Amino acid sequence: MGMSGQGSKDARHISYGDPLDTGRLIIHSDMNAFYASVEQAEHPELRGLPVIVGGDEESRHGIVLTASYEAKRRGVKTAMTLWEARKVCPEAVVVPPHYRLYQRYSQLARKIYYDYTDLVEPFGPDEAWLDITHSAHLAGGDATLIAEEISERILSELGLTVSVGLSWNKIFAKFGSDHDKPNGFMEITPANAGRLVGPKPVEDLLYVGPATSRKLARLGIRTIRELAASDAELIRRTLGRMGLVVRSFAQGRDTSPVRPLVPATVDISREIKSVGNGITSPFDVDDERLARQIVWLMGESVCQRLRALGFAATGVAVSVRDAETLRQESRQIRLERPSCITREICSAAADLLCASWDVVHMPIRAIGVRALGLVPGDGPVQLDLAGVEAARLKQRSLDEAIDGLRLRFGNHAVRRLSELTDSRLSGLDPEKDNTVHPVSYFA
Image 1 (tube, rainbow, N blue to C red):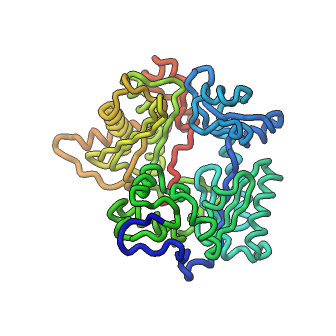
Image 2: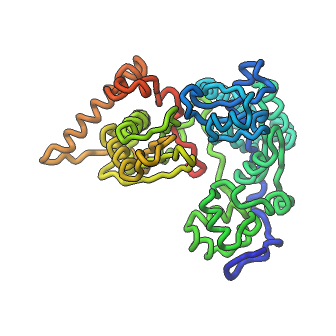
Image 3: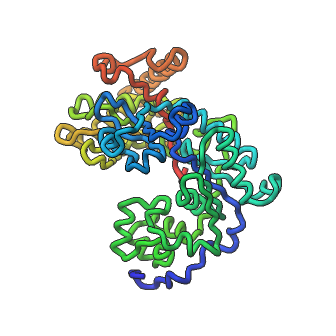
């Protein structure tokens, strides 16, 4: 099999899963081409047509957020620029995103899921895990029939198709929904995992990205079966602790629970490790002043959410997407002290971006800001003789007063002068137009 390292098992004789943990019934539901499918459900005249949900086509630099399967079959891919998509699919219908509408469909889907179990964990607006281990008997007892019934209800009640995976763990359940699209169903058991999962490339596994895949390839590890059979110490030395996590995923030894949400609450009710927001700009960002303005615009919405949640951040991360190659990179720094103050977080993020990338010579298509290492924001404050902490408390009080005005009168009630002096930024509302919260398997 081309395995490297001493102590590797024979990859053909891997036992998938721990016998003590294979009795769970986990469903993963993934609504296919979600944004585009919602647009087609809302506008019957779009059904059967190649639909692209993307940025402002008039602005030249919009990208594909989601494409319907009709468009995908013609070569349209996510993150492709709209002009590239037009080249491969001239007849495509491009529509702008309507995030509030997508959130409503997401909530409607969850209402269906809650008819089968209260253990529902969203993974973004279009995906969710359901643990029906202890509730399957209430719906007939056959997990396969329950999965099929959920799929049929999503189609009949919402007009959307879903791919469904069923397994004893969350990782393989998601693998099943990913590998039978669209409108498919795959059940993965300890008996068939070697045949269905083992031969697939390692990058088909959750949290094995391109960089991890390249490192594994240098060890001669290219399939999930080979990763499952690899030497643990070799993987740890190569990939660190996360390497051992994905190795256990490959073996089907994922015992993480489905973390439930209360139906009446929003996604942010679970434990949160970070809060972020980002934007794909309708134009290339090619000067430092504009880059800083966008960072502040995104960062302000992040700080507003931090304060609403009662958190402070100990670090800040900035991500950018190169306008030419669409390659994404990120950098992060640690703050001097935990903060939810807009000026501190946004200044740190803007300085980090400008110190890390030369936007004049490498124009940017997308910018994201994320607050990291969250801690309670209401801890005691030690005042100092220089008055620094007293000034910080005043600044936070000002931020909270602005939050109150925006909550009451809308996010444009109080705006920065830079937004008003640049017409390209004046229509952006990052708090309203985007869901400003994290989606992480390890939350």
